[in-house]
Length: 119
Image (cartoon, rainbow, N blue to C red):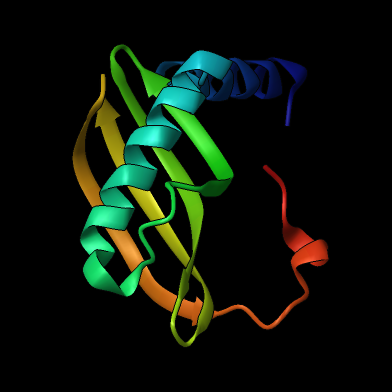
């Protein structure tokens, strides 16, 4: 394989990867706004199962912005009468409005609160 072939292949691969990357990392303000909106939507979706004490989005695993649209992956923790639960989910947020919300049903949290808790 010649150097020219390798160079052309590398340039073509770079051009394709750059053109496919339409979404960018979120700013701190975008991440906070999307996180609060997603936490409120998750709390609403969980209904009476989740305690009404507060909207707490404990961890955002990823955040991608494309114009006014922000897509996040998150873990929402809440307390119920049976114990502490963690719900993983994704949300597509435009402004303060959650366009789509996908929650993965709760798993009981068995770890100590000191293990994985930040505010």
